[in-house]
Image (tube, rainbow, N blue to C red; front, side, top):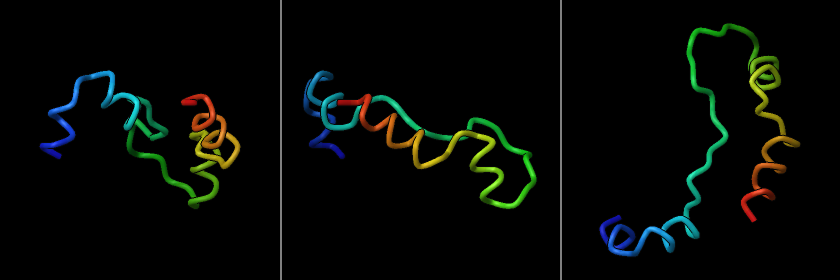
Length: 54
């Protein structure tokens, strides 16, 4: 990690873009697949986000 941090911000952004696919809250209770769908964690959404990163 130290070597990574030595690079300038533009280089770090190219390697690890500052974008995520995640859940920003707790407390939902449902079967896994239902929760994933509700929060947009679907294959289609993840693929679209990855493609948008270029």
